[in-house]
Image (cartoon, rainbow, N blue to C red; front, side, top):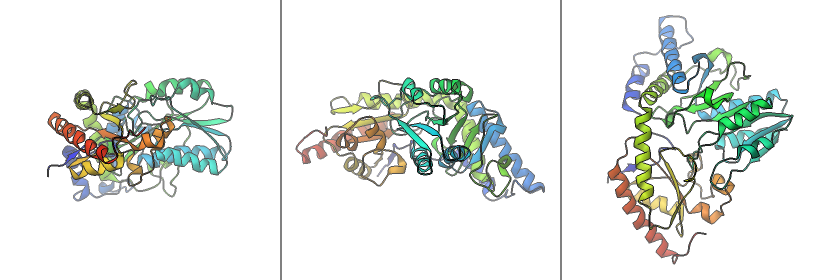
Length: 384
């Protein structure tokens, strides 16, 4: 059976060019970049080259980047270190549609004494900057707003929020993991203080990510015990993964325009082909990632449909990858005001650069067939 992967927001396959760049560091080259001998110096040079490549992708200064093992670690570091500096008191704001790594870290800060405010998005999946800024108080020490929602693909008004926060003296964390590598992202244009990204969202390896810290912004390390990353993140640097991150960043920067056009073509063809299937496309009225389509099929259980599609050779998702394996409705969709039944009828289809128009057309036929089967089993009653 030919299998087609339409779950690129969960993770992307490793670009062969990235794998080729990593390969020498998985065997032939093996120095610890903290060592002063020639093996260590060679490894350190590779790490710094990757830092420069990654920095170019987001328009940053290389020394402002801290390599981490994941976007989750990077988000946790900013949130928990900020709460710690505030003495686990004061106030923190986030949108209600943040990634679980932000939701969980802020919840922990709340358990330790921080007052946490979650701002719900509008029904179109976008946060109103005016409403978020209205929640800022004198004791607010951090605002968290992602750039692109991992489920809906909707782009958030980060720059507007950051400008308003800075007028009030409040720093901003932007989780840009789902956006970097798919659309142009520049730290100066966003005007945030912290930004996180992850290699495996743009054809790099798992286990490699970065935290950008604006010059002058405070950062207390979460991991301690060594002086790596200029004392901002203790732990021996994962050289092969970091080299892969740098290579993926350089390729993404060079191919950005072509990728955007290709992905938007696939998404638009898919959504145009949904006519007649009794489908709602979430977030279609606001700016979105070019590769993401989040839909609800009335009268169809999303989990059941995902399983049937997998058996037919198509990999899609019912929500964030971190929530896979559960049948609970997506917190993001509930935050939009949907009922549990509406949320459970939803499906996320996220395209990648290896996908083709032919695969999209074939998928539409299978989707229509499987949805009809599931609807016939429940008597055609709508999900909402």
